[in-house]
Length: 67
Image (cartoon, rainbow, N blue to C red; front, side, top):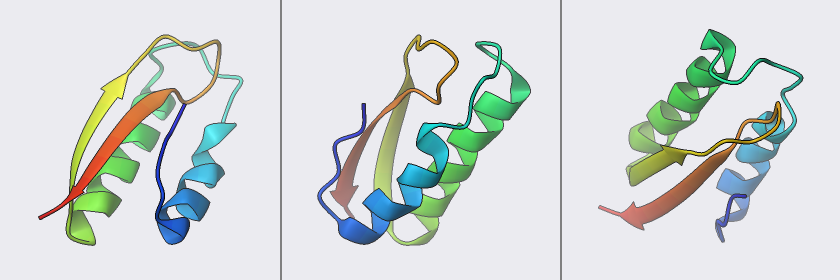
């Protein structure tokens, strides 16, 4: 459940939407989320990433705002 209007970011995130199947809370899931967060920060976007319980998917609600 990711709502982003910027096409480059949307395309980037699609790579992570169906990573599974992975156990919830696995290090792979967390690492993917942190990678996305770091990527956004590196391209100059403020990010808030909140994990939510999803069935073996990378589930993040991502809110972006320009610095």
